[in-house]
Image (tube, rainbow, N blue to C red; front, side, top):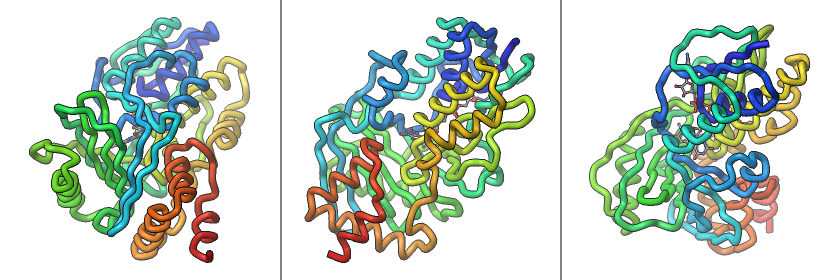
Length: 337
Ligand SMILES: Cc1cc2nc3c(=O)[nH]c(=O)nc-3n(C[C@H](O)[C@H](O)[C@H](O)COP(=O)(O)OP(=O)(O)OC[C@H]3O[C@@H](n4cnc5c(N)ncnc54)[C@H](O)[C@@H]3O)c2cc1C
């Protein structure tokens, strides 16, 4: 049996790594040569769990960040954790690392777009917004910085968007971005205003407003497989809509795809395993129907967090997938108190 994995992002390289490890002949094909960059905040949320799930990531370089600041309207709070909330990486290095691991395990890497194998893992990343029930748009850039920043800044509903603005610190860089549900008007203006906002508060001293735009899926497709194809990662819409996180789910789906093929399981098993492993994270954001309601709920939650340490911890740990909380239930309980 020969398997073609199309796309060497986190989903494809992980699938190829585990397929090759199971002794299967695997071709990993990407339309771009590596190392290549990818517009992304590069946050590995809850990095200790990553290392537990994917031991081949041990020792990967990146910046562990322990502090987060959430702001909305007039309110803001900070939370410092004992365990790292996120490890930030440059996607150019991270994706190349994963590809090298797949090749070391025995996968053959090819640059191109043609398929040869009997079975295909489609890990070609996000498609057009029409492909998903919901999708978003992001603008992002890694700004070089003179001093390292040690806090992640999250600003939900900045200027009323259905989404959030962020700063993810990396070694030598500040990754600044905005992500919002489509349709979203004037996203470039919002991005500029957020950079000005950070500058005015003395968080950054960077100049200019460079950015790259990238689509992001916010809902999984209806079926994750066809007769000869398993669909993994962004191609299947495996992104947590509440924060835009997708690397972890891309890697999990890549590993499940490899198991499905190497254990010669029915492809429906792949879908069932994906839903069981991470389907709960792919639910739409609560309070999302109306822009006004979302803005009100976000500001209220940050306001509560600014006065209530327990609630701020819950919000931060939920965002970074450190623990699973029913955030809506906690929120309503706090409001009724
Ligand atoms: C601005 C932004 C910020 C983000 N920040 C985070 C974050 O901090 N943390 C996080 O967890 N997630 C984040 N995400 C989501 C994350 O980037 C994706 O979920 C993740 O990259 C999905 O991995 P993937 O392997 O499915 O797809 P990709 O990483 O997109 O890889 C797909 C690969 O397929 C190749 N390809 C495409 N078409 C073909 C073809 N026809 N033939 C051959 N090759 C092809 C591409 O060249 C690419 O290398 C962010 C997304 C955006 C847009």
